[in-house]
Structures are given as structure tokens and as C-alpha cells.
Image 1 (cartoon, one colour):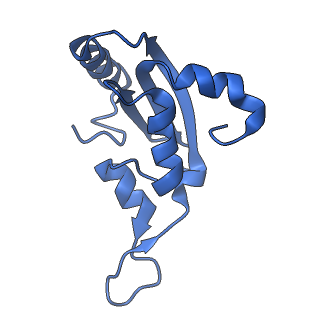
Image 2 (cartoon, rainbow, N blue to C red):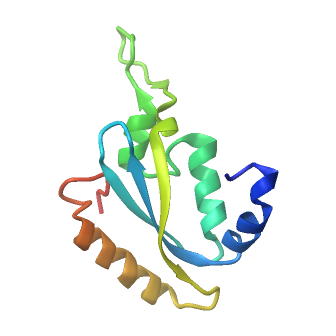
Length: 122
């Protein structure tokens, strides 16, 4: 969806809003709650996951890089991100304060228990 032209209306909309999103790993059911706030909008956050497989998040980085077939412990980039399913949990307008977005993110992490059983480390 991020790069396909047929979704240009969605891309335009997601490039304008902040929000809370959920990434579900379809290979194991683990979930990650993330946010897009400030100057970075939802589309830009999702593009970063497509680009590098982890978007800078610690637990997702561990999935994106593994010591697969390496006897010396060297990290090899995997294609694990192909298992990620993206969902919007809540959308905020561009002028919503960071504190309101942060509070919503914390709520969803608690409600979905992604710190205890998922991929959130903070």
C-alpha cells in the first residue's frame, strides 16, 4: 500500500495525520503499538518499516536482523517484515499535541498488553 499508485488517496491522507498504529507479526501473533507524531506522519513511519524492516524499534530490529546460518555471530538482514500487518488504532489531526498522542499510545500498550506479551520494550 505504501508504494502502490492505486492507493494514492490513502497515501495523501496518511501523510497528513498523526496517530497510533498496530503492527501484528502474522508469523507469531505478537503485536507492536507505535505512534506517529510531530512532523512525522503515519505514512512516513510506515515507509520507514518498509525501508528497513524495523523503523528503529529495538524488538523489531531483533527480528529484522538475525544470526541466521552464521557461525561467527554476524548479523544478517532477514525479510521478516513481510509478516507485518499494519492497522490504524486512532487518528489525530496535525495540530494535536504530542502529550495527547503519547497518552493514547500508552493506553493502547496497556490495553493490548504489548509490553508484557508483545514487541514493545518501553
